[in-house]
Each structure stands twice: as structure tokens, then as C-alpha cells.
Length: 262
Ligand SMILES: [Fe+2]
Picture (tube, rainbow, N blue to C red):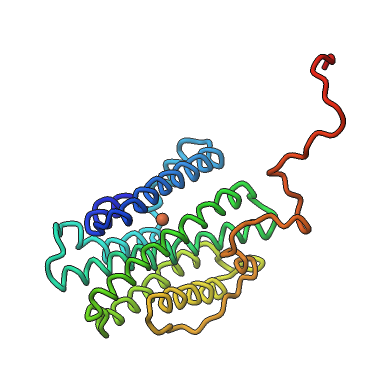
């Protein structure tokens, strides 16, 4: 993630204000890594278990497939120094769209669904609370990338031809399939409120949202089956009527004296 940000996106997106945002994004990605590492240390205190978790990208086929998907669509840009030709710019666009729509916008959303599924069962609240901030940041990263795509579309509308639409649609279909492979491993025979079929519907619905945002036709026509994901896009504000707010202090009542014995 951080590599692609620095080695590809920062290199080619050269407007100063966009680079300011990318610097912030890089910092946020580092905080996310730190947060999940801290949780991993807590959930898996045994060093061997932790080593096995880190080796998942080599040992678990569904996770390896997701990594290979990323390399397939994003790798070719790293060696390009300047986007001279239309072909270079198309490759860059595909890299950016893969990063934003498929990784941040789909793989992460799959992961968010598992986290909030746990929360809906009353489990792992610390994970869900931290993930709320990650969710907010990732939604912003994605929106930033999509606004870069909007700018490219304004500057070079001819890049957005049928070929690009076909490539992006194929890419999202592949991403849904890769994430689904992971869901099959995870859900097995099905969990209460979540199974492979509902995960498929959810991922397809998210993929359609990404296609629509990019100005392409949606291809799946699925609805979101997870009610626990419904309000997740809404910014967190404490509603005093529904929940007890703890992030403020009540003024001290009565008189305060500092010479009393405590
Ligand atoms: Fe991100």
C-alpha cells in the first residue's frame, strides 16, 4: 500500500495540493498498520502464531490470490518514469483505479464487513472502534483517488473509451471473485447472519457502487444484504437521545474547595 502510494501515485500526481493530501494519506496508512499490529500482538501473544499469520500471504491460497491480483494490475507502472504516451497514462489510470476501487474500495470493505459482523454479535468491540477510524480514512482515500480520476477525465476524455470501461469492469469482476474465494474459506457452511452467498451479494453491490462512481455502468445489480453495514458511511456523531456520550465532561456542581482533605 505505502509502496504504491510513494513509488507510483506520488510520482505521477504532481499537483502540490494533491501531494499534500497524499502525504496525509501515507501517515494514515502507517497509523492503520500500527493499530492492527497492536491488536495482532494482543490477539496472538504466541510468536509462532504471529509468524503463521504473517506468512498467510504465502500459505493461504485465497490470500495469495488477492496479492497476485494486485501485482497483476498494478505492477507495470513502477518502472515508468514519466507518463509520456496515452498507453502510459492508461496504465497509470488502471493502477489508480485498482488501488482505490478494488483494494481500498472492495477488499477493505470485505474486511470491514467481517469486523462489523463481529460487532453485530456483540464481539470484538475494540477492533470495531478502531476500524471506524480506518473506515473513515479509507473512504476518504478512495474519494480522493476518484476525484483524481475525475480530473483526468476532464483533461483527457479520450482515455475513457470502451476499452478502459471493459478493463475496469473485468478488474472489478476479478476482485469480487478473489475476495469471494477468501469468503468461502472464512464462512464455510455459513455463520449466523452471514454466508458465502450473502457475502457475494454484498461484494457485488459494493463493486457496482465503485463502477457507478467511476462513470461506468454497474454490472451485478445486487442489493446490500447486511443491515449492519447500512449506516457505516454516515459520519459518527453521538446522538444524545440514543446513546450515552462519554467524550465530554459535566461541569462541577456546587462549590469547590482546594484545602479539603481528599
Ligand atoms: Fe488507504
